[in-house]
Length: 464
Image (tube, rainbow, N blue to C red; front, side, top):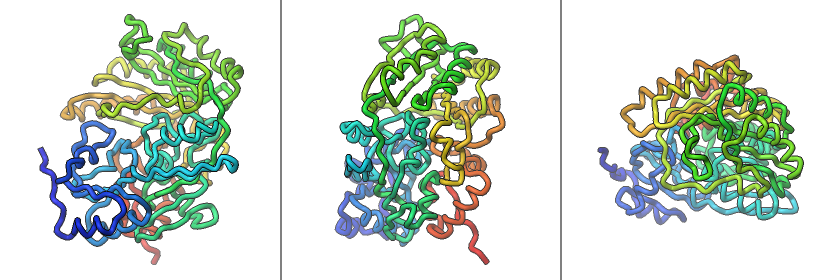
């Protein structure tokens, strides 16, 4: 059991508190254990101090403290990163959760959002006006992480990635400068933060485009998992109109009240569907999925867009071995492999998640942003959940073998779903010229790699 660290003598907590508008939390404070908790389970890290900043000026000051003391600097928003980068032993944590301001311009179809908002809170607020910006599939995810990594969610085929609706940001650099960044101001930095993660600064505010989404047809459809239904589901998703985005989770059916008891634990397709458009057209678009097999459960219905995000549980902190990848096709043979691997899972529960991409996301030129996988056809995310951290090696081996078994010609990776998997996998997220350009921008804005507690892109060597 690790003892909580003490605050280094080089930092005066009274002086720091006097200089900031936000809150400084030390290991002696009653809220310290709550503040250092993250979504990922099995993480018990003890930062030297946590600063819940109130504005960009606070962020700049804390960055200065990190530079002066040499302490590592972590940045936390929603705390969902698979690498748990938002909390690190003996580090300073900039906690953005109190940056909750939201300024909605209904007529102009834009919104300025604080970097500490969650996707669910933002979506609920703008949804009251029949508007939406696409994020991921989990409401408690922070805007900072999901946006800077790309953003693949329920509206990806209709409106593209989250970064395709990002118009501007307020960002604090490694030298403490507060910049307004958009296509006309610091365009190189604006390119980099749209997919390059947290490598280039701390975003304190985001300006998003809003779309009219007065209603959707969406929800969960549970089907039996067979080679034919899995391959058929993917074929139907590829043939569907762009208004429909789908997520197919091939997994054991959970013991939910609406699922018959004799189906609990049997491999199923727990599909999440979102048709952003007319309700009658949405029902027609979803009909081919219902026709694949007699549904075990059908919760798909007309609803408002914010309803697609179910309530989150504060007590859910899964420990998982995960792999993210892209595949070109899911045919019957690949579906059989998926079922075989899931049947041999080593943990408490395993899932293969399949997301058909394309649509608006694919029409943006690859070189337009730092997200390099516009042409990828299907994203596959593999995970096994377990409870004993001592069994990590066994479960990581299962996940790695599973990934190898279904890998095809697309060797890319989605940075938002990467865990701590090594430099090669980070390079897979940023292949070829994308990596080179990011490393050059990193050298200009963060030459000492202050922002390195992330899926890190080291600065390129200085030009001779």
